[in-house]
Length: 274
Image 1 (tube, rainbow, N blue to C red):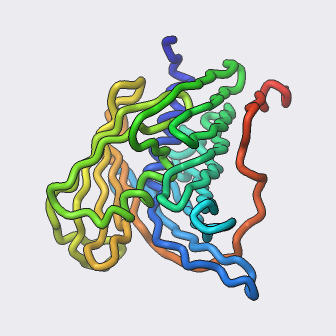
Image 2 (image 1 turned 45 degrees about the horizontal axis):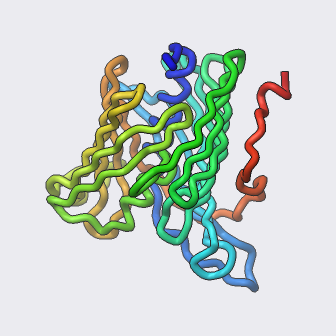
């Protein structure tokens, strides 16, 4: 199936936001006597020295019994400025990850140029069952088995943090983007001195390349050597050039109430809303 530009753009926005908004630190376990807390990570988005947007990633504690419990990741983003107004982008994405930080379910809402898109999926047991809807364009459905590591844009950076990477390490995975399933090749390169939000540090540069799908993209990520915290992500875009996502703050907030993770059967939502 050949994707139209209207389908590729929201998927591109989701990957960009998902890869970048996943600037996350480990959430501390919650205590039964206290309200559940989550970490909220804030970041700025810039292109050519201009701020075009901002976002937040909320990382919840693992809930449920032992290693079977799932952790909620909530990703939000909004474009700003003149350039942002052209794209009119907005994102609200929820992914649920297991004890190994691998996604088990996803529900993402996005909007680009006033047109809505909706993604829902289950990713457990090596089987991807997904439905991607674009307002006015119908739905794309997938049901396929996958081998090896299966990630999504929200979970990719948190998963990388758990690897405690060292220069020279490489990984191969599949990346679910909503409308497609891409090959993801990642490699830890060298330790570099960088400065983010006025703070200097040594960070490990990791390069990632998406291929074998509609989107051919590359991303560079820097993880602080001191604590593996992600500090900067650069999306290399052929249209806009380098899009920078810089960490600006981390704080604890109450865990929000959200709808449960999607389960089969996955039913169209936008069609019912029209």
